[in-house]
Picture 1 (cartoon, rainbow, N blue to C red):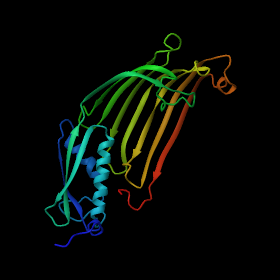
Picture 2: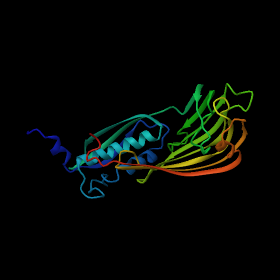
Picture 3: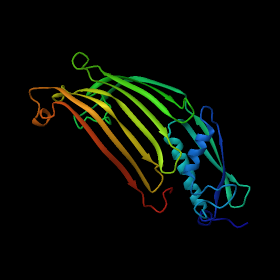
Picture 4: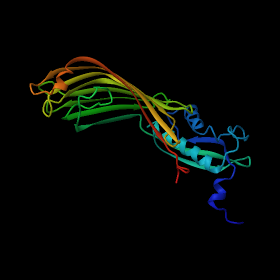
Length: 273
């Protein structure tokens, strides 16, 4: 037959008639299926019927599969996922087959690092141990209950300041994806940080608090955003004699909070090229 050009292929009516997921071990199939369906909401059909938002095309299906893979990667539970489109039983449909590979349940890490910190707002986004060489370690448990959740703790201890107000941190983190079109995941981070900046600056700061982050659906859409609320109790118990006026005015305990938003608009006609 005649050779089909990409322009003709990309505009042909097509929708996803079914989804088959392979390679799951700890993950609950219903949870992964719901996550994938949320990304395919605009091109998914029910029993071979019309797509939810009218007639979709081959390009729409490719965009939907790309969104589904982005959501899978964002869980940090899977090592990889391959997507294959097979001809569906009903004309104008394709069946999506996902072959998944899960990460190990337990991840342990440790070592040394050189971290930096600043007095700033003292909020929980800065989980460092100050300007110091730190001994650090972390333990993460992924997908223990099959809901694609991730829970972990990490800590560090300053090697250079261990005798006097040692820099240190202890942080608890949790992440949970949501199988709905509008929200990709919710993350939380809570802990305590001591940053000894005397060697390069003039103060020591102790913070205790956390933040909650809500991210919109995958970053392959034209709009992507995150909303972050931070709240910490900060104390600057020590400043040197040569501290600046701005640092001296911040001494003592105080409560700090912040509401941040990050967004991106992508107005390209074709984002997959």
